[in-house]
Amino acid sequence: GKFKNDLAKQETKILNFDFYIFNLIDTPGHSDFSYEVSRALTAVEGAILLVDVTKGIQAQTLSNFRVAQKAGLKIIGAVNKIDLNPPHLEKTIASLANLLKVSPQEIFRVSGKTGAGVEDLLEAVVEKVPPPKDSAESQALIFDSLYDDHKGILAFIRNFGRPINPNEDIYLLASQNKVKLKEIGYFVPELKSSNAILPGEMGYLATGLKEPGLIRIGDTISNNPKTSPLPGYRDPSPVVFISFYPTGRSKFEDMKSGFAKLKLTDSALSIEPEANDALGRGLKIGFLGQLHFEIISSRLESEFNIEFLTSFPSVAYRIKEGEKDYLIKQPQDFPLKPDKVFQPMIKIEVLAPAEYLSQVVNLKNVFDLEVLEIENLGENIIVHGQMPLSELIRDFDDQLKSVSQGFASFSYEISGEEEAEVEKLEILVAGDVVPALTRIVAKKDLEREARKSVEKLKELLPKQQFTQAIQASSGSRIIARETIAAMKKLLGNFGKTGGDRTRKMKLWKKQQRGKARLQESGRVDVPITVFREILKK
Image (cartoon, helix red, strand yellow):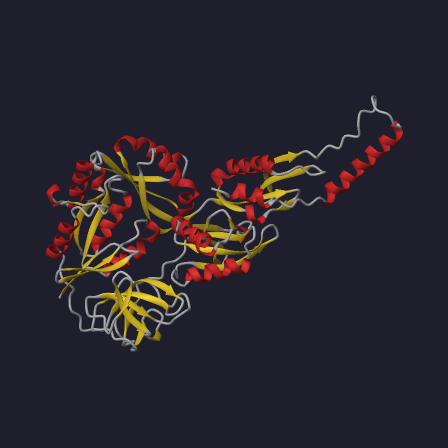
């Protein structure tokens, strides 16, 4: 029959609809996965721009729409969850029609729950989305992957060239690796083996590979190593780095094994071992963004039953010192006096109802946000701006939701780098640096963050038999300080109790000398409960 393709990603299914086969890819809707979205859109001819009518058009709706437009796809608009009889249904339809430059009558109304309107939408796909083009070259695009204990890594592909057969040798063009296929097949929606994947079809290739990083999203597969790769491939690079330390009954080796398995189908993850005195052995993990971190940490907990503690998130800074030019991903590695520091920057778009314009713009006073343009969409506005990535991961999402009562959303993309005014903030307890609490902080925020840190530690740390100094420093400067007084040991009231007053005075002086010795050699082990409280978002 004739082949049709429709977009979206995460789930991939084939649906029979009379004489047509629909290959459906459900795309993630967040900026962290913009590269995966762009690759998925390359694998199809058309897209259904599906808007949740209870939420309306989000910033990522606009972002994905532009990517689909750029890819030259036929875009069909639809609103979902009409069974809820939402009050803003007509308003959402009008907004979507305006975005797509079509009449509101051309926007489909569907319910995933009841199935209402779905058949009409599928008929529109058959009518409006063009069939796949023929290609003489042997080319298939990897748009996703999955790990199977028996079959190794399964590459989810869209075939743009000649039929692909089982047991043949194929080449992964980005890594120039040769693979003998173990099995090929379709998604119906469960995996079903087949004797061929025809031109225009989507399917899976069981590679037998068990090494992460060989199967890469966006790579081209061919039976000829000299075939021209499909355009647009790049290695997605981690931009946010967070340290993980096992806690409770969890062991380091179990955590390491869990991350290794997660990396089998997520080559964007970077994993490096690290250790510090307070928390022991851990792993520095690189992510595509904050949501990527939240998804992976949730999977580590639920799929592998690992308990863990995470550090403050950080970004990679580029350091220039004389002739040296290098990246640092750990705050502890930040040099004392670098010549220049460069940080990753993002372009950001915030979509919000027009009545929240001033609240959104005022976030520039909290974050290092430069507002470049304000676009009026009638009832909504888009604030275009740029800011350091480090500011975004600091707490931007929560603050934006707070000032807009949850109605604002944002999308972003990495836009390059700029020179940064930042310093290393270290926390000392009883004279010792606590590496797990070291951060890179904007100079303008240094005093505020230093004060906040020492006050929080004073509140949380248990008393010792000696006075504890809590200090926040940058280089050789002490920026903030708090003191926790020593525990008191009362010997009783000299005037009202029996016993030899002279003997009690000697004992009291001996205790004072002991405290002085403790003060000189006193080392404080920060309890794990304190770390958990300090490091939580």
